Each structure stands twice: as structure tokens, then as C-alpha cells.
Length: 107
Image (tube, rainbow, N blue to C red; front, side):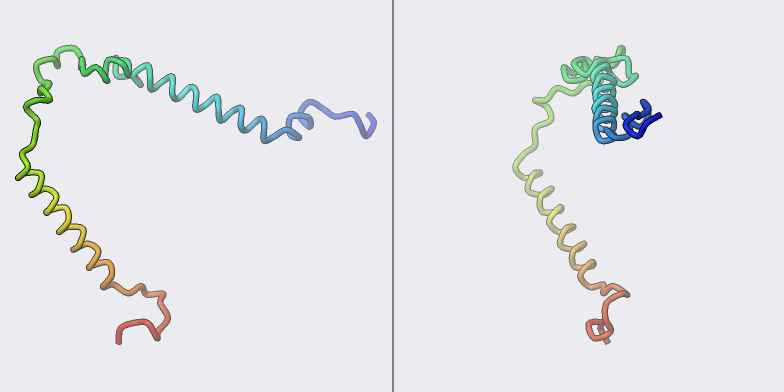
């Protein structure tokens, strides 16, 4: 065996990025096919998007027209969300991390 002879394994290892990219593309493709086929739910993604639902579930679907919100309930939900965000941020900013230098810690 001369210095220029390489085994099949050495040839593959020299192109390790191509091997990894090919394997990654294969795994991603298989995952998308699995999702589009329904991921074991018995329905395809197209059936789910149409809202046909699982067998025997047709009567449980709510019509979109009956799910509309009034402006009052939307305002209340937005206000509630804003209050929660302000409260959480104020709690987070009041805490000083233990790793902060002693000159920045509260006395």
C-alpha cells in the first residue's frame, strides 16, 4: 500500500461535511413526510387542515362564525395580558443576581 492509496473509509471521512449534510437532509425529509402523512394520527395533514377531524368527531367542531369576540372582550384580554407582563417584568427587575459585583448589589 502506497502513501496515495486510501481506503473507502478514509475517503468518506475526508468528505465528512458532505456526509453529515446528506444525512441531515435525509432525516429532515423523512420527518416532513411523516408529518404530512399524519404522524400516526390516522389523518393526513390535508385532512387536519380541512378540519374534517377524526372519525366520529364531526359534531364536536365549532363553527368559526360563533367564535367571534366582541371589542369589549378583546380589550379585557389585552388589558389582562398587559398587566401580567408589567407585573412579571417588575418582579424580574427587582431581583439582583447573586453573581453581581458587591458594588451593584442592594445594601
